[in-house]
Length: 216
Image (tube, rainbow, N blue to C red; front, side, top):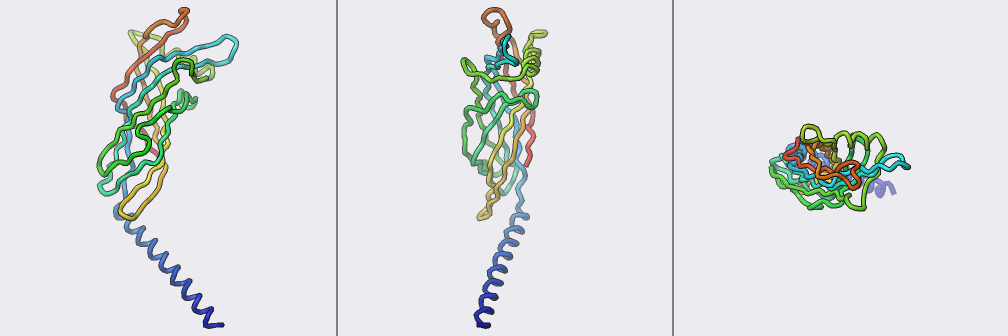
């Protein structure tokens, strides 16, 4: 009996030692070739059909717009490729009020090779009969930004991008969820007056934008 218990104890010790050694080797291997964090920037953004539709009997307003953003993601690592398994984006006004989730991101799944970059098209389609309801103060701020002054206004927007990525180096795989935050100040001009003469329809193009903030 004592011999059986001793054999099991030795076996457990051996298994634990194996996993500890393997984990230590992976840690050393990964630390040696540790990847650098991804970088991101907005290469261009096109905003069109932007309207703020206030109703007298309802608090707040409905915002209609179409926005196409070209997001460039750069992998600065010399040794590690980055695989994007999921990406979703949201648009914000005034840093907090949501203007909706992106209708499409293309490509949705991709990888960025070592020391290279990839372009991702992000589309927000809330024009026509589809809109986003916002609070009254947000609507007032957007209306002030749209107002044409000296030939044009500037609309401030923020895009939050949530991703799931895998860093891969040989047999070593590490997962992460970096969050990308892009601030955009898009110059706009009045396209036309809205039907009835109240408010305006604005549009503008940003090219190129500033570097986005990336947090892990």
